[in-house]
Length: 239
Image 1: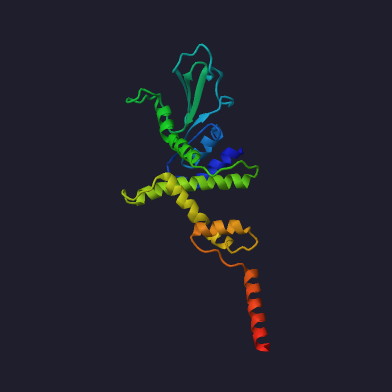
Image 2 (image 1 turned 180 degrees about the vertical axis):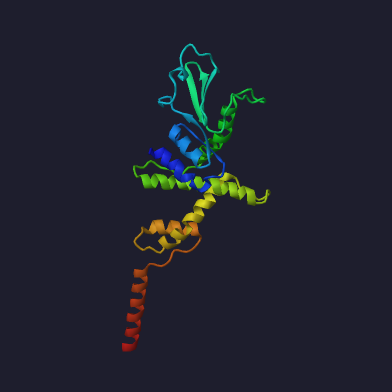
């Protein structure tokens, strides 16, 4: 079983047999995936890559097909759509929730395309928001890349929850919210690091300034100070 198919099945396991619809792009879409989801009580709508063996040759783009023309293919459970969005270019959609050539009365566009754009735009919007305020950095370590992506998603989702719960007069802008959230995430770690005497003094002073506290005295300095006090006291007693 292909990795994209495994990913969709694993993520959708919690909503099986709920009659929900899943929308995804052509990296995930395949006929076997749609078939498996249908057996698990879920419908599917997604774009297909043109190299899929199930796509008939007549559905492929060619110079004889008119702009914005469409071709439908129907089976008992699936509907395949080939839509010419640009000259010599076709978009392929597979759906197990659409079974006719219906057109949206408001936009004049095909219902399959309208539904796909309506549901998939949420994913695109999240990607856009994550890219505006992203903590991702170039890395060759996949665990780090995944962790950075998780932080971007957490920042976006937490801001949505914040907007729903905060008073309208006290709401922060997203940039300020992200900065505050980042500060809260590292605060406990920073408080520990300020006591690490192996760090450069300049760095510890910067941390103290950010925390608004005085720099803790150096442990070795305290030892020398106490030793001087002991020697002075011993000198006084001997005298």
